Length: 229
Ligand SMILES: *Cc1c(COP(=O)(O)O)cnc(C)c1O
Image 1 (cartoon, helix red, strand yellow):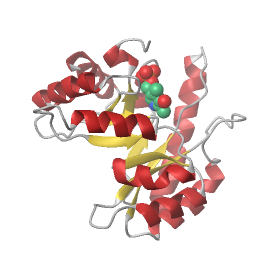
Image 2: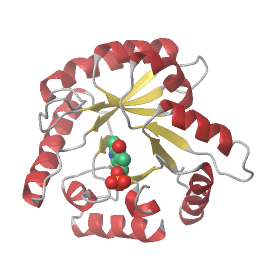
Image 3: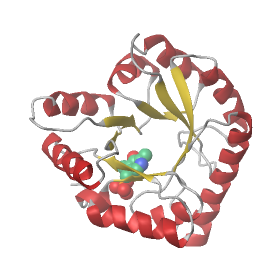
């Protein structure tokens, strides 16, 4: 945890950018590993709330239930980073603080309907299929404005920005180009919605490139936990 936070800071500094927030990706990891990293994070950064990302609603529900039985776990902010089916929107709107995978109108309406009364607004990122990959989730860049306007119309949802998973490529220049294209989308979005503050991009093997292009949140699993089994 310490090494990764340090490396994120160093990369950001070398590009004269503010350090992005770390989202720890805990898919397939047991609750006790989450508890350990959440505690380590809180010891390193007393003011920050540890943020964890899960890909599946069911897995997150089970893990959160188990964490509730472990003593001394600090409060955790939960992010959904996997594709969300509309029929799971009710559960997702209860379990998560953020949903990073908004790519269609129907999902926005369902999450607004199901966010429990009395909770803070659900934070949303619009997922962009930046490399226009066939069969991949995410909207096209030209669909972002309409989805953003729809989110802005719901008081119990809060538009925070954009998320992307660029196509894998052995060529750093190609990947960096995708991150740069995302930053451009983000600037356009921000001109219409000045409050957006989050550009979520970069994973274990490419986060330095994403930070170079202005990521404000990096999503890291393998570099923190080791290879998934
Ligand atoms: C699994 C996953 C990550 C983390 O990937 P690592 O390579 O393990 O760092 C980040 N974002 C999304 C959307 C993921 O599904």
